[in-house]
Length: 346
Image (cartoon, rainbow, N blue to C red; front, side, top):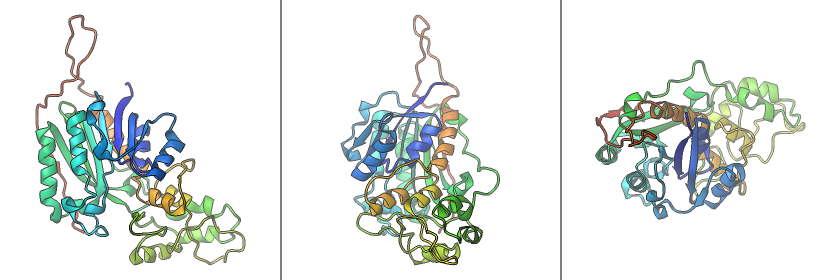
């Protein structure tokens, strides 16, 4: 099976792009407007990914031909509580741009993720508009709430995920199944880095941190700094033995109180998001942490990517040329179905 071709929009620090790469997708372009995030992308994959530092509104999807997948994590503020849930009235809503690029590039599949707020009744009409546009373009659609912990990520991180696939490949798509067993606890995931500078309380701390993390939030450029979230989230972190008011520059050392509450470093938070330890984040601490906090966990993207790749590798229609030498993809849909699994109302 050959490498599948994709384009990633609103790529951020590359969490989704990395997971899709692990699932067998080669990125023709990863598009991101934030300069620090673009530096992160270049530092880690600049030798294999074409990093486009630009506004999605300036991108012409017709420049990408024969795409297998258009993917992206469109900004969540229009649908998040912190962003006041303005939806289509929010200037940061990039779903219209994403749908424009789908129409222009005509990929076989689409993968877009957002916060679970998009799945609430408040946005029933908005979701219906998105689905209607995709159906008119010939796609079958799935919309579901995905829990990061189901795919080995030690974090309670629900995301609302949209998958759209053309026929005949859509008939072969199955939603990825959760991994067997429980994800690692925060203590299990972080005992190594937490003990790396000789803190004598590391083992006892790891035993206390015997659950998964609350949802990690990155804040925006207008609001939020480098800390682990609002009051309720910080209370949950405290139960795990973590001081959530701020991000540390390094792990606790030998002089840190044995029973103290350590802060997490950006690298530790990245591990809780499912990034490999080798992934570098550019920019000052606040900018780097924001990239980590806003990322889509690579293991979740990989699971979704593998499910999409399995569908795309099936039922490749063959249209014989005069010499029978090549295959041509048939973009005409044979069925249009909507599968909307409504998430719980938060």
